[in-house]
Length: 354
Image 1: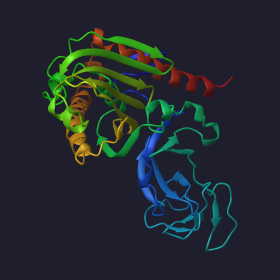
Image 2 (image 1 turned 90 degrees about the vertical axis):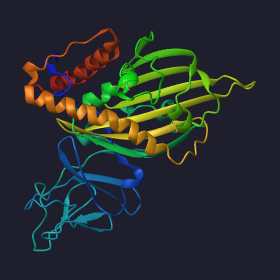
Image 3 (image 1 turned 180 degrees about the vertical axis):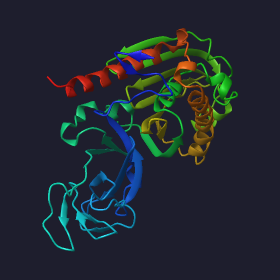
Image 4 (image 1 turned 60 degrees about the vertical axis):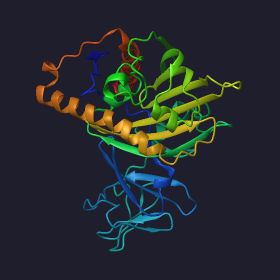
């Protein structure tokens, strides 16, 4: 599927680089260098003595060893384990033990980072062009808003194109079939919806009245009753974030207990056919259920296994023999694809020679 000359068909979809993606949970990045592949780039993460996160291209330009492979930190610099060359937090060589003056060619790419709440965001493009206004509003997500309680810590690796994960998480019609009644009673796929677009946000909204609460939903979201009115709002933020928001008004009590529960998922491509899902659970109440992430892992891994299988068959057939036919309920996905294609097309135009 080509939009504005951009291949945006899941399985082989391109991704924009002049955008922010979740790189890690804040707790993952410490004074111990950490290696991670993102966007096909090897990246080393660590923190300065002041606690600021650093991300550098994870390859010493001298003889090619990963800086994270045995590299040691000396104050805010990282030392290559092979020949001891040190690089500062800006990626510039600052010490050559064998002698000589560091040149500009002896440097590594520095990635712009922004730490907000429990996430570290990374700008995939040129660090000097990073635009923090493109990061989704964390108050709006509930990650930093007063009265909300976020929990971070679940990361899932998928061997499938990032757009599969992005579209799957905002597709309600698969819930009744792929998840075997874990989170609904079979009433979602045929339910009417409203599609709402606001900038790069595309939401699919469904309203349910006097609905039976599925056991897993009741357990993980600390609900008390058996039935509730529910609003299910599935939102994509092109190109890298999904929010599954559920608003419950429980029946069967005078107070009619209200709950606002959200699953916020950052989706970051690690390569053309692989990605990481960084998951945060957010509630407008303190959810202390100890098995929350175990249950979420079980649920979301059903998606990961299915999408990995879809990717395998896509690769075996090739894009020409794996046509895709959309239906009416894919409206939100198609709108999101157009937004991503426009982002990539804009990058290409900016790079094109005058």
